[in-house]
Image (cartoon, rainbow, N blue to C red):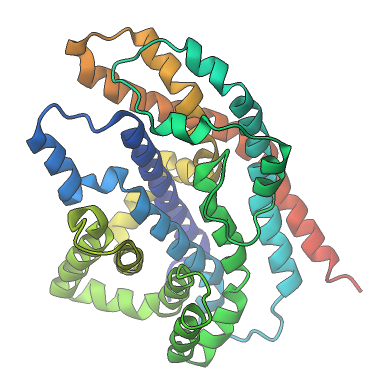
Length: 375
C-alpha cells in the first residue's frame, strides 16, 4: 500500500510549483535573453539539459500530465479497477470551474487595467541593464477593448491566443480537457488499452486537442504508479535508466531543436513528464525533498504565481531593474536580481490571491457540489 494521499498531494503540488518557476524563467529569458556574454554559454544553456529551469514548453506538458494524475489519483489509491458507481460528476465539474475561474478573472481584470495604461508606462520607463527585448512590447503593445476582455474572460473553445494573459491559453485547455477526466477514469478501470485507444481516436481523426494525450498519461500514471514504483525501488538499474530517459524526453524540445517538430516535442515532453512522475513517486528521497515546507507552499500558490507573473514581469521587473542602476559590469548581478525579484513579487502577490480568492473559490465550489447531492 502506498503512502497516504496527503503525502502524495504535497510533493506533487511542489512539482507544480517548480514547473511554474520554469514558466517564469522562460518568459524572463524571452524578455531579457540568457545571462550569457559568449556563444559557448548561450549554447550550453540552450542545447543541454541545463535549460530545464527555463523550459516553459516542457513545464506546460508537466502541468497537463500532473492534472490528469492528481484528478484521478484518489480513485486508484487502493485498486486499479475502482468502483465508480457513486462518482459525483456534477460536484466534480463545479469544483473544477470554481478552482480555475475566480482567480483567473481577478488577475485578468487587473491585467486589463494595466494593459490599458501600458503605453504610457512603457514610454516613461527608463533603460535597464539587462535591456528589455521587443517581445513584451509586441504582446502588450496592441490596442484592445472590452470585446477582447470578454473573449478572454470565457475559457471556452480552447483558445490558443490570449491578449492580456498570454500564458492563459493553457487554462482553456485545462478546463475543457479536465472535464473529460471522469470518462478517462472510467475507460482506465475497464482496461488501460481502452483509454489509450479512445484517446488516440479522439485526437485523430476527431480533432480533439493533442494535449488530451497528456491527461491520459496522467491517468495511467495514477493507475499503475504503485506497481511501477515497487519495480523502481527494487531495481537500481531500471531506476537510473528511467531517470535518464525521463530527463532526456522532458528536455528534448531545446536539446534537439530544430530537428523535431513542435507537435513531436509536445508528445515527447509529455512522455518525459510521465516517466519523471513515476520516478518521483517511486523515490522516498525525492518525496522528502519535495515535501520541504517552502516547496510545499510554493506548490500551494503556484496557480496564482502562474497567473500573476506576466503582469509582474512587464510592469514591475523593469522598474526594479531601473532602480538597480546597474552598469555593464554589473550585468550578471542585475540579470539574476531581476529574475529573483520577479519570482519574489509574483509569490507575494500570489499569496494574497491564494488566501482571499483561491481558497474561498474552492470552498464555494465544494459547497455547491454538496448542494447538488441534497435530496
